[in-house]
Every structure is written in structure tokens, then in C-alpha cells.
Image (cartoon, rainbow over all chains, first blue to last red; front, side, top):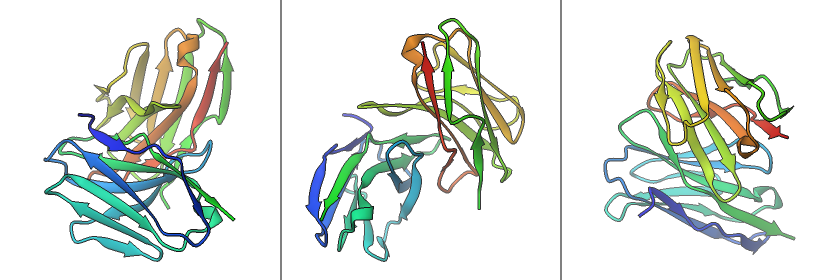
Length: 109
Length: 111
């Protein structure tokens, strides 16, 4: 089993739609979880951290399920500007971060 | 705002050249990383450093070395560039338990 797995997509959705991505991780000792957004030919930027209780930031909601070892990202009312690749990131007890390969989202008019 | 700055956005080098990629962060972070990103392979860790003069190999260290003489600066060195090292190189830093911050990336082409 790969350390962090994501559906590569692309997810093609119309503007205004709700879309959800899941990400599974293999190391049950993982401690911190993040969603990053990466635009084409740009660096990844933090979208949101993922907390055990779940957290929301505007149209974005992140959830963590430790029992099943997955995290999710829900985007409501999709905008054209949400088109990007979304990277799931898991940090264990050591120094390094484990990145998923990303899920590509295309929001169309 | 945390700033991580990579010395070049685009580089073109010849096979066999020694290549230096520089990364500087301004937030006194202990930990710094070098990744490469290739289509279909995602981000792969080359080397990381958790303190001055300390370095650890990541998943794909072959053909690379690093230097961390000062806390704010982490350099990636391609000893003898090869065409299979054509890639996007990303530097990141983080203070410990929060998120990582990335530089803008260096797109290296080896011809």
C-alpha cells in the first residue's frame, strides 16, 4: 500500500457544484495532516490544516477519519478559480512530509 | 509572512555541469527540504536538514548533495548534471509541527 494515495482525477465539475476528494494514508502513527493547492507551474501552497474534529474555512471543509486512515476535502459552490491540483500531505513523527500525487480539479463555466 | 526564496525560476545547464540551487528562508526554521516534482510521480524528497551542518538523505538522493552552512540557507548540488535530472525543484522549510512553506520552484532543464 502506498503511503499516501489520492485519485489523480481530473474531476470535471460545473461552476457551483460541490466536489469531494479523499486521501488515504498507510501510517497509523501519522500526526499532522494538510491539504495544499498547487496551480500549474507554481509551488504548492497551504490550503488548510486538517484537525481531528474537522474544520471549515469558507467553502472548504476538511475531515479526518483516523480509524479508517483517510482525510477528505469538500469544496462547495465551486468557482472557476478553484481549478488546480490538490495535494494531500501527511506528517509522521519524524521531520519529513509525505505528499500524495495530487487530485486535479477542473471547474467549467 | 514566511518567505522561502529560490535563486532561479528557470535554469538550463549542459550535461556534466555542476549545478547549484540555492534556497533561503527568513523565518529561522530549523528544518529545510529539497524535493523534485515530475509529472505522474508527485513530489519526491531528495534531502532534508534539521540543523546547520546536518543533512539526511531522502528517497532519491543519488546524484545530489546538499550543504547547510547557515540556518537560513540550504543548497542543492548536482555534482554532474544528467538529462534525467531535468525537473522542477522545490525547496521547503518548516519550524517543526506546523505546515511546510515552499519556495517558488526552479525549473531545471539539462541538455
